[in-house]
Length: 236
Image 1 (cartoon, one colour):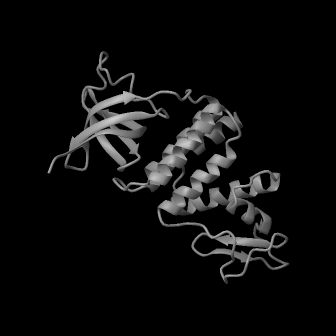
Image 2 (cartoon, one colour):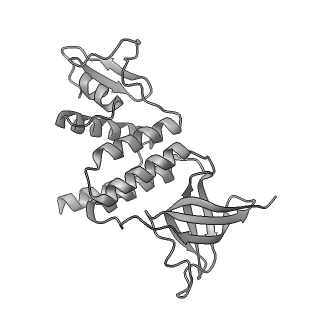
Image 3 (cartoon, one colour):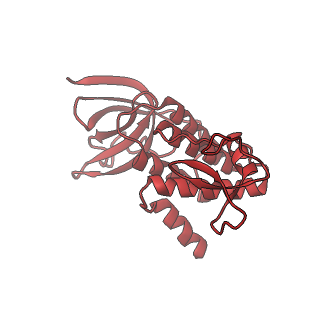
């Protein structure tokens, strides 16, 4: 059955060529999740889609089709968001890669869409990116079924700010022993992360390390292209 949807809020995540004149566009829509779409003729020099299918910009799309790949029927740029630049652009690619690799197709996640939109707005404004990135990462894990328990340890005991913890991706935090040699997290970091409070520099650093560990776990060791580029630029 061919279904048609119009006036759908969405963002472009990625495109790749399809035939000499068309593209496959991977989009993230608020009401229908991540969807691959055939953008017919989008590679032609005079195509109206060439100036519309832009990453990190709010779009309004219409599409139809009953198969795995839908057909893009209409695309309009909503506007109102500055283009991402420099480091913020790389962080935007990081968000997109996480969605492409971890989010199933056609699985709606309105809360995650809103978190993505808020993160992009923060990056576009050039303000401190860590809080919104951590909120997005937490929302992504929660929406794909791996929500974090940050205020209690694996035994159900309340996290103590002054204690130190190991964090196991499939279980949660476990209080470390005095002779623990593995990297640990301050209990305050876990509580701050739960409250989205990143004013403490230690919280900022440790929460970043924890989220990197968790994303690597759920990516099954796959290296993100955006992270590799970011590391290479830092080395350069």
